[in-house]
Length: 146
Image 1: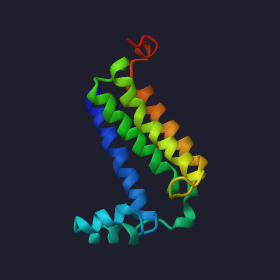
Image 2 (image 1 turned 45 degrees about the vertical axis):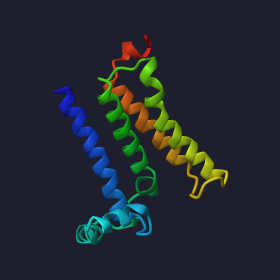
Image 3 (image 1 turned 60 degrees about the horizontal axis):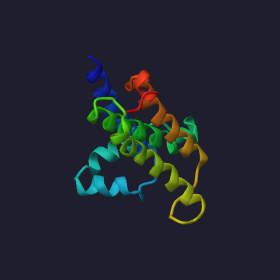
Image 4 (image 1 turned 120 degrees about the vertical axis):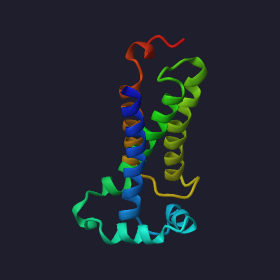
C-alpha cells in the first residue's frame, strides 16, 4: 500500500506542476514546445481556456509551487529506486538534483545562467525535497547512514 501511495504522489505532483505551467505560464517556455512536438496543442489550448483567472492565484503558486512539486516527484522517484533507504552509495545521487536546482537558481541571481532568480523557488525546492524525505525515508535510517 505504501508503494502505491508513493507512486500516486510521485505522478500526481508531477502532473499538477505541469498543469500549473500549462494553465498559467507564458507560452514561450520549453514545455509548450514539447507539447507542440507531441501534437498536444488542442489539449494545451483547452487547459489554458478553462483555467481560473491568474488574478485569483498567488504568484508563488504559479511561479514557485511547480518547482517544489517537481522536486518532490523526482526525489520520490530516486528514493523509490533505492527502496526508500539512504546510504553512502546513493546519498550523492539523492542530493544531486536538489543541489543542482538550488545552485541553478543562485546562478540565475548572479547572472551566470539565463533566468529570473526567485528566493521562493529555493524555498519550494527545499520543501519539496524535505517532504519527500519525510514521507518516504525511515527516520531511523537518516541518522544511521551506512
